[in-house]
Image 1: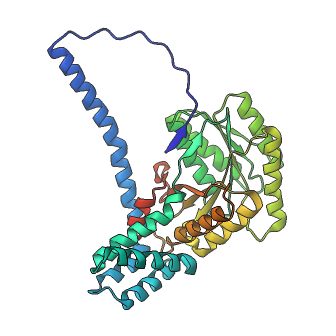
Image 2: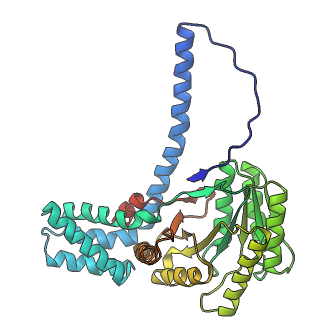
Image 3: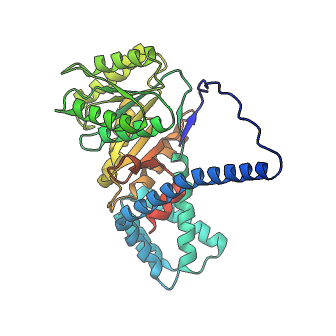
Length: 360
């Protein structure tokens, strides 16, 4: 889920007394193995449950694609129906052409003759296209990792920040939130509620805010405070912006510049939160925010019940093209997917899991 580089100091504790030899040793080892097995089983079960919710959320997308493979033959009709299904799923014309071309190549190489085999090859093609988006969120390369979270109104920025703070707290990270969305009514209070919700079960999450303050000033104060208080992560919640609101996008650029004044290496992450239901409009948002701010990653929300989940294929192809045009640039990452309102409903992105869910 996270790549944590910093080694946290450990508290010295007395060594446990040695167990008696023989059966006691075996029992202790057995108990330890059982405990480790139980501790590993819990997160695995939680992940399986979340993947099932993802499958359920993408059922509207997957059913239209999956029906294509009910055909009895692999012919031009199947490919035409698949093209239509991918376009309806908002994969976009570019990604649709790319996937169909890659799929036909795989079918020829494998001499696939059954629709079920073609479906499995499409899953492989989609997984390979999405794979560069799958990357761990790195925490600890600097003393205090600063994240700037942006997006349009209603995409779920503040909610996603609360869930991200939950994951970070679970990873033993000290988190400070900057309430830099000073324009939206109750945005500051909403962030405080999330901080309290996370703090009650996972440890304190601090919030820096000002009533009606300048967003850049709030963010600057938060970065300075986070470094002074020994926080591992500072997350700035910014006001919602439409890519067409150029004067408001300039405000986000100002916030980014001010963060760099507080820490010349920051922000270490610029995350865009996009609503998975917006389809190709999500790709337009990625392009616009990236041009203005230089995005490092995405959080894709509201995938519970969308018919437009194919847009991640379009985003993956765009990111691939951008990386090819600028070899020094890393592909954009999709760090998290959201399928519900609970703290645990924001989970890390897996290309294979998403491809399987998308195909139904």
